[in-house]
Each structure stands twice: as structure tokens, then as C-alpha cells.
Length: 349
Image (cartoon, rainbow, N blue to C red; front, side, top):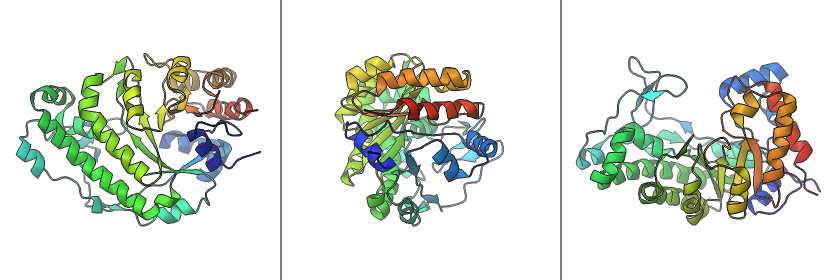
């Protein structure tokens, strides 16, 4: 029996086998615009062509004007001026030398700056046909790095742990309240609380398990508990190799991990499936770089089939690229080959 996209995804989150493996498409605006132009499709038409089982809703920023300073191309709600490719890199770390009192008196953003009034109508417009992603992205690890500096933050975890706790606490206070307002407004129309923090690098976690458990895990638990309070599944986007951290993420109730990069150290798909597949949903795993960018439609089709052979059995798997941002240089025909192969090889008997 053919399921709706929403039922297909929720069945997968229940670690049962749906009619087929759900498909996920996350793409950079540059790739998305290129694909729409090349295929002569609008946004929804492209989602349908890719058989994407998800749709996403966002709050609108309605706060003070965030004006970049000279030399910057963007500024965050935390006052971080950034410059460079894409989202860029911070030009300064305003709390690098702050005292604890200065952390508490820093001009933290106000949740009132986010307008949640349109979310319910947008989510309801999909008539429960798709799995709806909502909530604030909540990249608290990255914001703390912006405010303190990476190396400086790591030193302070040993020398001034209470200051790092205070910075993270203020950041997550903001994100949690924004998401709470979203869920109060439209929680019955949202299925998955989708958040993002990249705790991994190409060669392993950016934090050891001890520091991760001490400083990051309590805030991840807080966000997970918030989503569960409203009956939502919670999915974390986490790039890189971080297999050492997965048991702790499962301990605090995380439902799904995205996007699973098999080219990173420790992220062997067969081992991940064997060790954790019954306890957490994996989303992604089809190599965005060596397969989608450098491959051909024929090689992409074969690589997708190989990933499905490893990750599909028993449910608990969503198929898609190994990063949420399919990059502009990715050939559209390769992405089509991936999604067509998911349809071809993803059916459960």
C-alpha cells in the first residue's frame, strides 16, 4: 500500500518498514535555483520531481535591522559581524575576554524578534501530506565559538567553566524560547523539530566525549526535551565524524541524525547501522562530494543502491545526500540519478 510522505516518514521514525525508504532533499540556494532553471520547475515542482517527503516552515525575523559593518557581509542576532564565502567567518569574538558579569549583561537577542504568526497557516497548507520540519535551527555550539573564539572557548572549559556555561545558557535560552513559541502556535501541524550543530570534523569529534557530555549534551537534552514536550520527533544535523558521541545523543533521547558523512573517520555505514540502527534514525549517507559532485549518473545510481543495501534493512533510514547543502557545482543530472535510484531500490517488499 502506498503511504503518504508523512506516514512514510513517521513509520520510519517508529523503526518500522514503510512502503519505501523516505527521500530527503536539502540544497544550497545556488543549486536550488540552478536546478529549477535547468528543469523549468518552481519550488514545489522541484520537490515533487525529487520525491522529497519533507517540507519545512520557518519563523520570520522581525527584529532590529541587522546592518553589517564595513568589511562584513552579514551579522547574526548575537551581534557577530561575519565576512567571507557563504555565511562567512566572524570578524571578532566579543566575549573573548569578558567577565562573568559582562556575559550576563551582554545584549542578548529577544525572542520577540522572531515572528511566528504565519507558521501555522504555512504548515497546514500541506494538508498533512508531508513530514513538516519546524523549530529554530539552534546552532548553539557555533554561536558560542563566534562569541568566544574556538581555542579560547576550549581553554575556558578548563579555566572558567562557569563562564562557558553562562554563554551557552543565554544562547539556548533564546533558541528554546523561539522554538517554544513556534510549537505553541503550530506544534500540532509540525512533525519534526530540526536543529543543527556540527560537532564533528573530517577526522573525528571537535570535542572529546568528556567535554561534550559536560558542556554540550545538557543543552542538546534541553532542546530534545522541548520537542518531545510537544509530541515532536527531534532530528539533529551534525556534520563530520562523531561516532564517539552518538551513544550520548541516544541517551538523551535524540530521534534522528542527519546527514551522515561516510567519507569521515569512523562513519562506516555498515557499522553505524549495526551498532545504532535500532535506536536512532539515520538520514543521508549518500556521499555529496566524491559521489554526487565527481560522479556520473551511472555511478551515482550504483552508489545509491549500495548505500540502500546497507542502511535500508529493518527501517530507520531516510535516503539523501550526506550534507544538507547540495552545492551549486553538483550536476543536476547526478542529483536526479540519486533520487530516481532511491525510488528504484528503496521499496520494501
